[in-house]
Length: 72
Image (tube, rainbow, N blue to C red; front, side, top):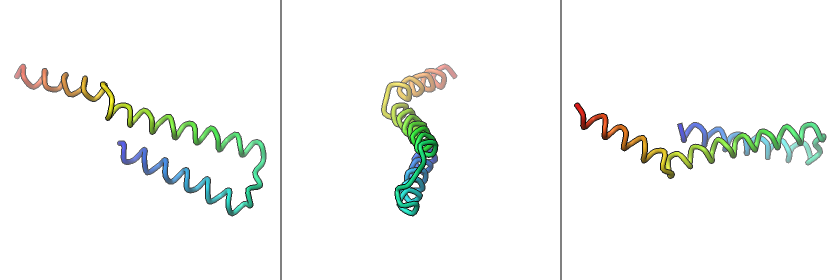
């Protein structure tokens, strides 16, 4: 899942950057707002995935799995 979110993030950032370069940095206010919202959503998804795998949520899930397996 993390690899998919990371790939999506990289594709979005690369695509937005390429579009801005090829359009000569001339974007309308509406397009600018949309790009900012897309980037914010991508950053939030990346933060959630990284936070899960480096934070306590994965540790809690592993503890729950270990507890479930030990009861068998």
